[in-house]
Image (cartoon, rainbow, N blue to C red; front, side):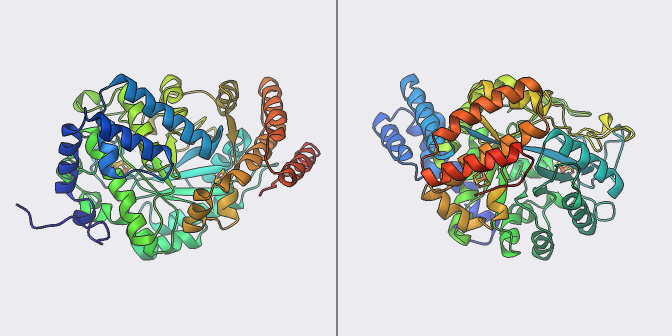
Length: 476
Ligand code: SF4
Ligand code: SF4
């Protein structure tokens, strides 16, 4: 028996992501999977929108009864509607460099892969990428780099962020840069904060330490505890919006669902604010990576259940799916919990602009949803969603606990809906195809009428007119 005890507030990864607690939780869930009274009690609690614990979520993951399963989806759908309405926030990844010294066995950027061209964007190439992204209509980026102390040092990342924020092509602007770089020191997180990043994103990959250590045999990332404690250092360094996630398919998904929720509970207990977002990538084929090597890959049905259970557990945490997912599987999860989507993405270094050598071959994973941003915007409108390019909270200083306390009091709805309409209107004026513009205008006209506050509705309508006249960047 190990003498390490579960402690949600601990600074030590092995205490807040406590293997014994996760295993006991999974056993408890198996034992109670047909306990109708308990499941109904958990569903009733979830419906209140105040979240459920990792143990309760683990029970829902196991539910076998079809009727209870449907109720679970129904509650997830209604909760999502209540908190997020029909808005979906759009973003795109921007890969800066695929040099990496780590040995992650599921990622083609691993150091020993000699079949992939290595690329690192110069500041001039970043400029071209950002102009291409702005010309698509993007306002929000997620920066991605491999880990390399000399090729991609923190100075390179900081300089790149500066470059990105400085570019204003036509009416374009990147208004929020989220950053997904390797676990680093609290001092470096402070530098990122000072550079004006939005969310710091780092996926745990898998919370199961033994699997983690097997899949990360070499490089600094092989240190599970250092990696798992990264969000604590980020918060100590002053970043209050952090994005967690697991790469589903590396181990049994149940373990990682519980791990994600224990991580969220830990951040909430220690810092008073849980993660801003949770990403739910699934393992995908790529250069040098065969998914047959990953027998725990999750099916679409399980994937949908994971999203719904996370939505019930942490109602106010944004949930993200990328273009790793196909149109069909994105549709499956949109209504039960997803609030952010990437669109028109390239997962290669230099994939957006013309003329970067070997760009296509340098991809991190194969994309399933290859549609352009305009096609995705049109598709979302057809499904009844409002694609939003909003970045208002971060720019108004509504981050961390300030964001969460507003969100929990339901006040975000007063900002999100009009902001979504105004940023969509900008998109329609500047970038949309004629058909998407038509659909979008119809949606805006309908949605503007149902803004609850008369004052907000009036200001929104004035701003929408001003956007047609060429003014930009309104926000609540
Ligand atoms: Fe490097 Fe990240 Fe890929 Fe691992 S997952 S090899 S750290 S780029
Ligand atoms: Fe997100 Fe804030 Fe914009 Fe709402 S108002 S969509 S929470 S950035």
